[in-house]
Image (cartoon, rainbow, N blue to C red):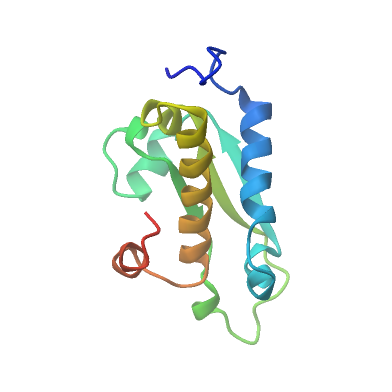
Length: 132
C-alpha cells in the first residue's frame, strides 16, 4: 500500500469518500444530470460477481464499475426504477497509486470514467477522450 507524501497511512474509506465527493464537485455544471439518481458506493474491493460482469478475472484489477442503464438507452417509460450505481474500489486504486496526488487523480478518473458509461460512452470512446 502506498503511503502519503507526508508518510501517513493510505486513506481510509472515509477519506476516500471525501476524494470521491471532491471529484463530483469538479463535474461540469452542464452535465449534472449524469449525477442525478445515481448511488455512489465505495467498497474496498469488487465482489467476484461485479468483477466478472466487468470482464475482469481478478477483482483487484477493477477500479470501478457502473451498474445501470445508460442515458442513451432510456425511454419514455423510464421512471420509478432504482437508482443506477457507480462503485469505486479503494484497494485497487491504492495498489496502482503511489502518492496522495496519484490517488486523488485516479479517483477523479474512475468517477469520470464511470459517469461516462452512464452517459452511454463505451471503453473505446472513453480512452479516446483520455478518461481511463
